[in-house]
Amino acid sequence: MKLTQEFYLRDNVVEIARDLLGKVLCTRLDARLTKIVITETEAYAGETDKASHTYGGRRTKRTEPMYGRGGLAYVYLCYGIHHLFNVVTNVSGTPHAVLIRAGHPCVGEKIMLTRRNRPVADVRLLGGPGSLTKALGITTNLTGTSLLGRQVWIEDHGITPDESSIAIGPRIGVDYAEEDADCPYRFVATLDGRFS
DNA sequence: CGAATGATATACT
DNA sequence: GTATATCATTCGA
Image (tube, rainbow, N blue to C red; front, side, top):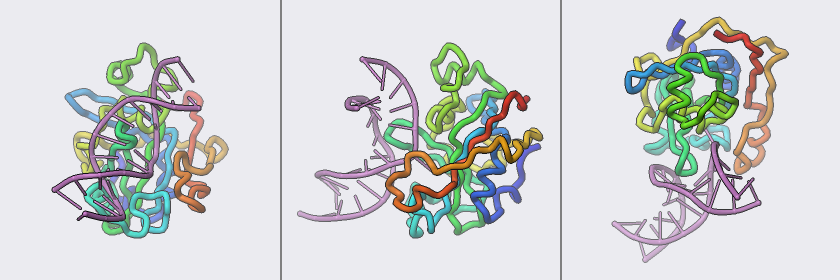
């Protein structure tokens, strides 16, 4: 059920980004349990990827978790407002990560509505990386946390989108990355009611 | 379309 | 140590 270390240690970050579609991202924070089905991801291929914070081997206090072992969380503040959640992959020393961009409510929908201060669950509840972390209660103080622990983890509920329901395209908001801005590293799944 | 909003990286003194 | 530009976005006009 819960994804194991081996899932995250694999060396093809693009493949892991695709495999994360349909998996269930869970948090238990402030004694409140929330789960969402992942529907959109992006791969960031570390040192060779101009869109990645670790391009060229840049290593700072912020990016330190990306250099850790696969299976850690990398959370950072973007535009001074939004906390963005990433899954660190590959072995220690290879700073790859997958950004979780969107999802569908699974457990704790009411808690998520409260955190987002919204009346009803629509596509905007979890419709972007910043909205998603707010709904799940994720903040930068979770950066470096293990995804095999008690606060945040990922489960397999047996949802496997087939090839035809996955759209692949260039990543969002990475215009600064020159030629790497066009890499087909973004995955979107359309799961028509196939989640529990 | 444009403001909000603050940590972070980088380039200076 | 201090200054400044930049940003893997969101929301509301």
